[in-house]
Length: 123
Image (tube, rainbow, N blue to C red; front, side, top):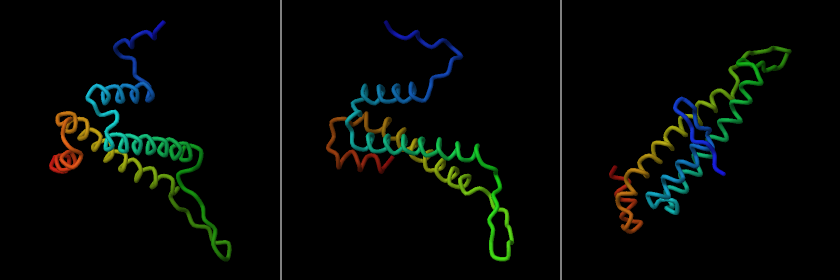
């Protein structure tokens, strides 16, 4: 007994999108490719970090207080916000790399790894 197919307008969950991407990589012969595997794992880690940082941001205020000597209090932006932005930028770069890998490596499946790396760097 299988799941009902998604109808138009329904959104796929992140898990479903992840499975779909892995299936596409497998179809293109990239499921065991070192560059795809390591980049995909890195991207999944970045998404988990983003999820945790988002939770921290949602639970705390945008501005936080820091106390110094003589009971002086200063307001600062929550450091989780800047870390979230840095991680989001890194994740965007990682996904761009994944797209390059999916489009370029699948075309040269029979090449040697050194050739694949050269070709990847040229794109």
